[in-house]
Amino acid sequence: FPSHDTTALQVKVWDSVFQAGHISNAADAFFSTALGVACRLVAVLPESPRLEGDGVRVWKVPMSDASPILVISIASLDRLNRELELRCETAVSMQRFRPNIVLRGTEPFIEDDLENIFWGDTKLEFIKRCSRCIMVNLNERGEFAAEPLRTLATFRRDANKVYFGSHYRAVTFGVLRITGQ
Image (cartoon, rainbow, N blue to C red; front, side, top):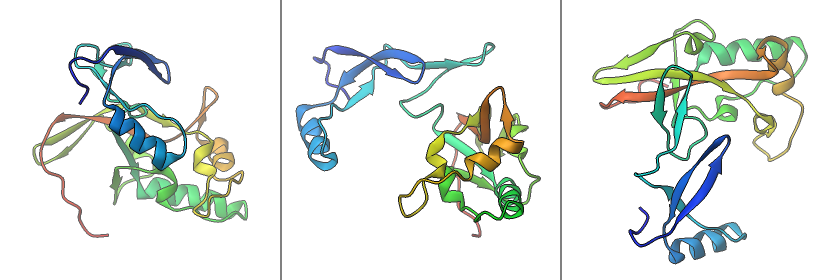
């Protein structure tokens, strides 16, 4: 957490501008050495939260992309891979999309239509669909290609954005357990 004597810094994550606090010089040195580029580690200040909204609701978001929880169904990935196969392209793994939660036994793209997801005491609330960037075209060997974004754009494009997966936020907290692989 930022120290209390830190000067607030204005930071920007996508379209959000908010105040953040410097963590420490030691953290800066560690990450600068590890990454090979000068870094400053900062955190959202409680008195200046990063806020996101959809025109109706507003919620706090950490420095993650749009939300800390990304949900994708196996059926959605299967549908994408069928489309790739029709184009004589190689199937992709779920790792390309980096979800936190993977749904099994659903229809394709159900994650776009669920208002809430419940597991025991945990309640996740839908925020928005996840628009994808070119990073999904980076394969496991560190090489960029045109796929799968090009194929996704043929059937998952809306308003010049390509969507795959959906962002959720935790409303109530409980324990999630990993079930069968």
